[in-house]
Length: 184
Image (cartoon, rainbow, N blue to C red; front, top):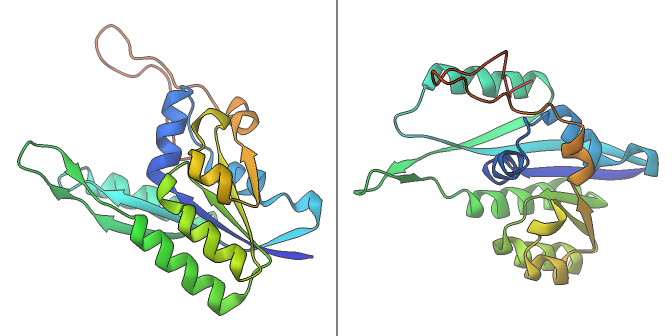
């Protein structure tokens, strides 16, 4: 059995889901990229998520609790407001350092990074130099060229997103029709 760690760039995955007009089924995503049918077992699954500086805090915390009940470790970073009214919470460094710490501590055979972000090419190179297989999962059209070069393998998430529930369009009155809960 191959020990596998799954590291999910939550904001990146949510952006990919929105581009496909689909909700994210986090448990199914974890299972899709773990590939147990290939003799792998999941050692740990971590989701990195930003928190908006002035968002619905109770809703966000309920969502994080749901992920934890599904077996994920949730790592967050509080966003910072910018003068123009937008905000940012850059989790790239957290993802890199957290992944390196997990790899040093648990020595997995495989790390699956669920993100299309080119900033992770150095992490893939570091993993491969250590003898750890570095797989990157994303929509095929979204893979950064740098990741295509440095990853051991690429996992296209198109098949996964086809299995996810479509987002329900807004009614003419601006309300969401049906139960469009994306945190299943």
